[in-house]
Image (cartoon, rainbow, N blue to C red):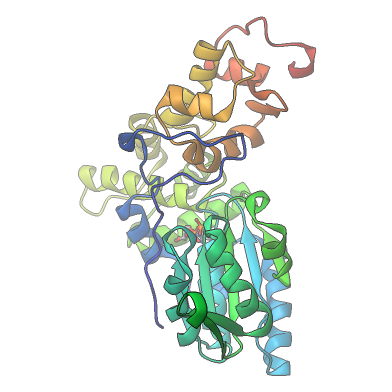
Length: 362
Ligand code: ADP
């Protein structure tokens, strides 16, 4: 399979919260570390039947894939959206394997100009898949270049300048774009409309995450008790990538105790403590977010960019990596005037609510 490595660009993207502000260079960092990516690759399910949870999405995909195979057709363009680490890349890479077609991988932020997309399009074989991660971060010129490619499998290439300028048309082989985005809301309408299928991936249930931890423990050649797997699942914010990371770190503690050490609840509790992951699954950075809004903004309302500056973290990282779980857990609320810490958020930190907490947030 022809593969390009996925990586996240360090620049910030279109800010849903207002005009974008420049962040000092030192503040821009990729939230996914190299070792996380390596672990992702090592543990990623290879077949649809190995994909755990997301039952309804998987069932719908099976129908789509079966119908495509039966008709001998090319799969319609497909979009996955959902928080980071939830399985978008996993599903996107399982699909071409299921169909027995080639897969190329690109990432929105690194396609600077149409010419960067050109090799992917001209290399795309009949029925093959082009996976574009972070598709909401495609530059407008690249996006426009992609439209006719997706719609009519054709590209328009401009040659020369001024009076000599001309456009040549190039026919492509029918292929499938699978897009992944953490922010479906940032996709332009024409881009969104070109996807025949759209699937949203949500946080995982405890039982599914427990199964993922157990299966990945086996892949990592380590043993884990059911209680320990549940404890890890419980503190993983409903996200397989976080569960994998905690599993790996916990395994280190188990190995320190005994070279073939089993991961027990005792070791898991110890590791979670050292890793500063609290009973709700919040990490240090998540608690810092709550604390910052309380200390600096009196509990809110506060704008995303203002919080990001106070924390010295790019707004994108806050919005993609930190806020989804805080919002879903009801610790933070998004209002038209900005983010607010809820009563539950104050309670979680053991802080008495300030004057900004009205009955609405009780
Ligand atoms: P995303 O592309 O949404 O950021 P990934 O697909 O890279 O997330 O998932 C991160 C890791 O989590 C994968 O490498 C895999 O180990 C695990 N994972 C994600 N979804 C599933 C799933 N449904 N079943 C089993 N493991 C999963």
